[in-house]
Length: 533
Ligand code: GLN
Image (cartoon, rainbow, N blue to C red):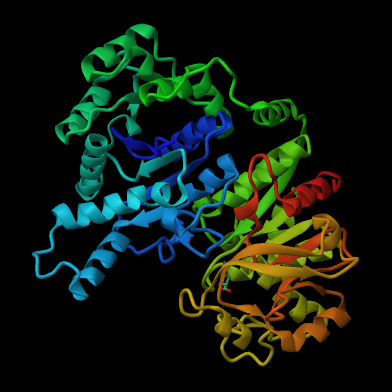
């Protein structure tokens, strides 16, 4: 079958959940047996999300091939259970960089290089690249930003051109917002009409409209929207607020989103139910869960989106442990020697979060110390793991000045440092260790039992490592280095077997936990936390 392209744009406001709608559409098509992927085009000039401030933009997601991506790629993987790559997230910066490189290589043979056609052709090439290379049945393309933004204009122009060129093989889904005006006691569709007019003025007629709303959009209102926007009435779909984002595919299914797409794209429509049994089972389990598990996420960022994948992984793991997650954020900057015990004693488990830079790190040390001394189940991720090691070196091994070299270049006990082995390994981005690496687990360790196998892999994004010169000291004092990279011998996992559950990982397990395939570390962490108080 020829690849079909579905373009998802957004209007009226940002943050309406284009990523969730794109993921849900893809999920429904996948559940009908199609081979599906999702890609995102971000209109910013940054080459990737790697240097974006986590406190402003939220988490930087990492793909197995070491791409630093927009956090929506996390939703794509969690919904679909398929791996994303560098090609699934393109920014304006990358488009321009590629065009400028071509210009320097004289590939344009003396022509004036312009937004149209050179930038737009480059965008189109990228929009169709995954389809052409891997012959997906469907490629869902999310266009970042809001229709009408100056910077997304070239993308919308490409959608227009591809719709023209591909005919039935291209489809436009536009997501808008229908606000409820309390003073008028009414829902208002005017912003939607204006947004669609804007899209039409750019030459794109949406085929399907998704209306985000807090309340039910009744049939009359939908017919009105259909009439004013030239969209079939049954293709005006509502997306009402739901308790969990994982409910959204079912909501769309109940309004025949999958069938409407198939019909509009000239594919056969049968009455077979999409294969969503395991998805529905997950939702049912989530709904029926009674027990509550209280977890503290101690982190150096105030913006909760900076820990998006961690939140999702924990909540998936809670569901699979038949419990509801009660996650509270503890901003590490607010912790001090006096209040740490008070604040953290309320929780059954503690997660020490990742991050860059020294700001807020002292609070993570205090949390690590509290957790270790009080035997609270604790999972440390990246910076969190490094803090576990430093705290242990200071307070158990007895190296008072132990530190991360990043935070104190003068320290004699640089238990976390840049390692030569790492520098050799990283070709992608200077000294940053990015992407998936193998890790061999020590036989008999708790971690090996959790994974149930000896060789695992994890996605990395960091510069600093546990310094191999101190491994003996750690092990002698009771912190075991139970996961090691087989090629570089870099330590990837530490655990304290003397405690009930105290594990730190130098990779991001949260990037590898999906709805139908929750990550074993999170499952085990939640299980242990549940029984801890
Ligand atoms: N800043 C630390 C490093 O570069 C940890 C990074 C992280 O938490 N991802 O090694």
